[in-house]
Image 1 (spheres, rainbow, N blue to C red):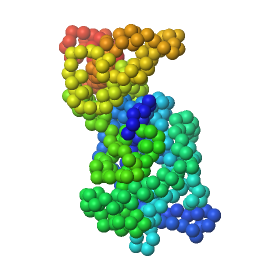
Image 2: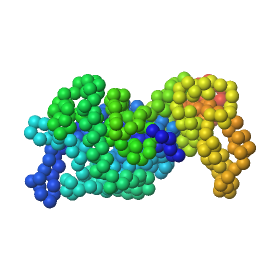
Image 3: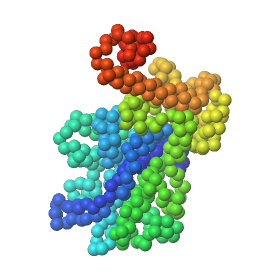
Image 4: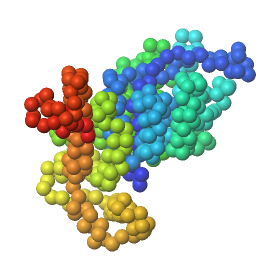
Length: 424
């Protein structure tokens, strides 16, 4: 994909159950249909999905998700932290609910169609109304204030897809599926017998839905000019076999996630998703890491080297602190004013800046400034605070009658309030 001014990752790695649903037309209840929906994607752990999302937030300008994924965010983070994430301006919500595939049951075969969620089976619905409907279904009368806040934030972060293009996108998805079903290598890898998307074997319904999901992701990504896509591993396996005369582009999955995992592993930086799950890091801590000036420069640098493993590790291991030869000038004009804007709102309004100041900012910067001085240091500090708090709670349980000015039971010679009784 061609690089864009805003680095957008289309995030399609949420769990997605598969199942049969029955849709009826409220204007004509007898007119009902039964079909298979969902992709049968199950995450091995909550921590894995948390880590993928946090890395996406730290490494990309925008993470594009769909309206129904906000329910996934609420399941992961709860209402309050979901609200904080949506406030962080790191997400785009795609108005894509009109493009939902279903395998319609007809006799003993399945036929590919696209369905709508609305009062009638065949009428489209906008993203915010759809999200409101999902929230009402899942939470009924509970969390009314939080739900209203989420609807407002989702609307503020909405990325519209031209409704006039909906039918074009749907027909392109089906054209892609037709090419897939005639792709011998792809069919062989999936062990598929189906050759017509309007006559799908029941036993192969889930495989076909996953292929549709991949095509849908690629086409929507192209529509919003996403820089890359983040796919579930089950769907990602299909991508290497695709040969598309329609899309005419080579699509790469998000390389940043795997590479950043390797970097944090070598630097012994703990799993951020696990730290969040254990309440060692808060959502505010993670957003602060994203918004830190070194975090912003790291994001730009990481993208500028195209997530190339050799180039990244060469830079991380180098003693040089200059990246002026590795980063594009169009990024420099953003970095310097942003740095000044953080230091002084008055200076931040200046639209241009001298090249000498820009250069001096970058010659003093190195990716390890973010990885070691910001990311690792912040995480280590929070881990130490968490251990101190745990020790404090343990001592309170073991010595409930100890006074603040009593000697600490650890025999350090300090008063309890200055030792294990101290909380930062």
